[in-house]
Image 1: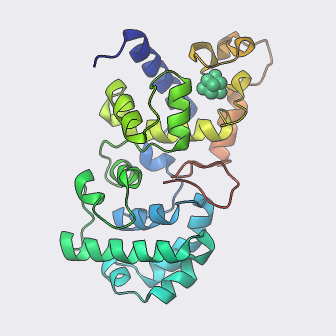
Image 2: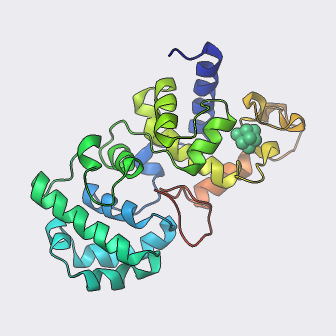
Length: 260
Ligand code: SF4
């Protein structure tokens, strides 16, 4: 179904402003340390219910001991559990990691597949994780939808859906494919730093003047602020410092974990 022009225009304005606020593509905005699709896939599996910062503490040892996907496929589960224990749900994650690696080795010739339909057949890999890998590791179109992305898209009137798959479809229809991956991370950052689930800071939001959910007193555009009123700059500085880095799964930090 065709989207109202006003929604399309709002989506483009949102995308333009967020790109200015959080410059970079999906690969440069991703907070999970990795080298290549195999490592990103493993790190993203570990990021479920865990912060990216915590994942980044355990993956150096994991990748040093299991540098190739074939090594992880043949790993002893007990050894993996010891390494990833601090990320939470370590038994299930160990099962997913080894299962994912075996799937890549046995069904895809030890090469992480690019196709969404192939990625989601791997243990521990859902649509969100698959889209992270596509957009960050391969530079392909992919728009991961986590709790931040869904919530903010609804607040901005870009979707009315609750189902992440339908939210993804709505957002993908509004933006060019080359913006999908970075746009997802930009919304996650905004969700962490400004548009929190319980108490959105509309007065500090660069989208307040076009957001249907902004509180009336907060609908001034950034360039309409009173002289000296801090809005964009502190947010930008915080993002460039790495404060509240975008967790691939999208949970607020600090927390016992984040979302995939
Ligand atoms: S104006 Fe408020 S509700 Fe709208 S995106 Fe910004 S923080 Fe969220």
